[in-house]
Length: 536
Image (cartoon, rainbow, N blue to C red; front, top):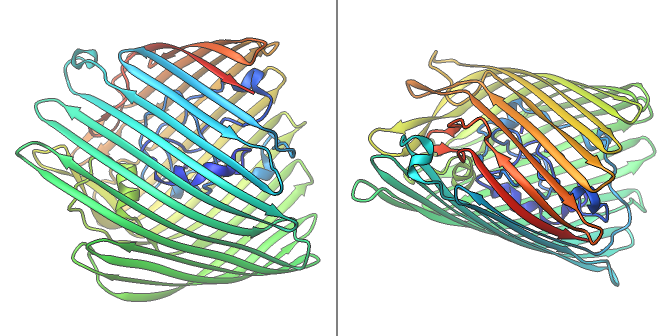
């Protein structure tokens, strides 16, 4: 699923890799001086989210309560930056943004970010946010409620020089979920991260590089009273590098990645991918191989072994009509290992005693993109994946806890996106179809067959801004039962003053549905709120 990358505020992306609620191809706040409209860019994200294919996005959403969509990267599609209608401004200007809102039943939302101008090559960005919801027990018909609180903070220091840039990111994300019916269960998680990135910019020579090293620490606990108490902690140490030589239309590139998990277990992945890329006005061809090795040790891992694989790496792009119509076909494979941190981000109710395992997906994808008059963008895709050891959730009987099981599966997916963008008016629509089948014949849990929705946004002379969204998800199977279809309708209306100050009104879940995205993860009931924002 699940992300539009390289939006203007790229500085705080590492934070998004560990969000338990958040984003797929979701709206982003573009930090620029065009705040007459963007102050009220409080669009509703897609139902659920995918693991983003880029961590260089900065998201602020008023309706910020959905959890990450499991396996979203296998069946979601994100348009490439090249084909987006919005253009990122080149000049960096000082930016200050603040938003606060509150509503009934009992939710609060606030965000603050600052982006400084570049001075002698240095710049500094910072971000803080809070979001919480605590509905009354009766607001959902007395059949159970979900309460949550989430806090985030991030700082990025950047230094740029002729031909290169370096970033240092420091991030924090913490959340608390509580669910009550006949049993009250509380799940708490805290995540800390640091990342260093050094990369070439502009390619002043025939050599390019992009090197990243990161460290993450997460901890938390689940408390179900006398029935269950459990705690977890995990460390993530990752490294990636891309080196290449550029010679006219030819590129010779080498990608190296290492991922390591440390806790009561030790597990990791190491891959090396040499490939060749040919690029001209018509073709964009990438071909190579990926050598991938995985290792594991510890009781938490289902399999303790060291295995190496060789995967093909092929991507062919064709500009059928320059700047209008593109086609792209790809085939790829790799090992993957879901960390406890990522699984906790997907699902706040996973058991602290769950078992980890490796997955090995092979995916073939065909995509088409059409851009008309710089106004209308249409994208469509179809993909087919073969996954060894795909993970599926199961219920821990009698508790608000889930574990994971692993099974081989095959998944066929298709979808389309449409985006219209003109002065004062924009609209987005999406559709997804998924057909997942487990080799053992059991039901593939928590994968919807159909999802669709969209939003329309209107701005009158940059003063009155209105946004209306609707998202729908079919029912999903879960461990012998189903979760009901999701219908989520909402809107925001606001007024922007000359001083860049704005007031807005928000209405969420207007249809009053009990939208249960995951078991025991229920959205806010029908809610109304007001807020204010300021930015320049």
